[in-house]
Image (cartoon, rainbow, N blue to C red; front, side):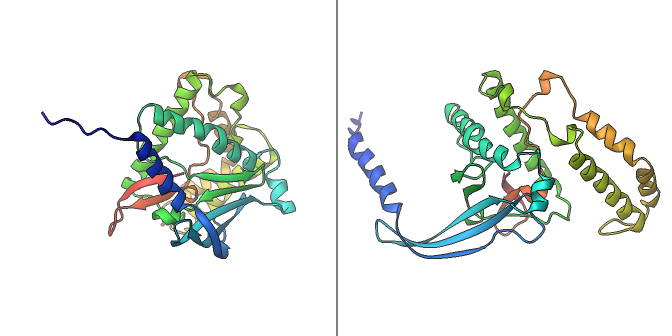
Length: 276
């Protein structure tokens, strides 16, 4: 039997250190800043893409891209988001919960990609700097269109994976009552009431007047929704009150197309990965 080669693990360690050191930025040559999302795609923050031409320690020239997300500071935005602590909650998710989920994946040898972008740094609680998923061929989809079956199944399975990890963390006491909040839809606030009433009103108008992609045939449903608007809002609020601990997870809370990016198999429309 052939004798196994004795490996110098110290040498291997030095190779790894050199590799990662060589890839580190040594100097920034040029910086360009642009909006990262089309107008109307993000309501709670300002999202910018920062492209940098850099030179690494090994002398290679590379282009690197970052996403800089900052809280909206206008008076109107501050008033609308008052009481939600949206930016604070999102930042804390990245620096605590998602880090614990990454440790959980490592513990169980889960080598799949994470379901979220990497956070490079932040200023509490006004700025976050994230990896640019576009650099890894992730892209947004049209929020005004429907997700097909392949996209929908991938989202639901990924959401199940996300919620399953939070269930383990809750069971271990790593997510406790101090980490829990109340989803805004389950709270009786003026902003929530205005948002839900407005959404239901616009939906009924679209059905009645055949706006957007709604075809004829839904007019009667639209009229019925309009008449029951207040009842629907109250019922939606009640649906979020659930004391069954069996279903208790740390909820994502805002899974809609504008908050997802998909990577697709090359030359197809088949999604192979999603991040939200």
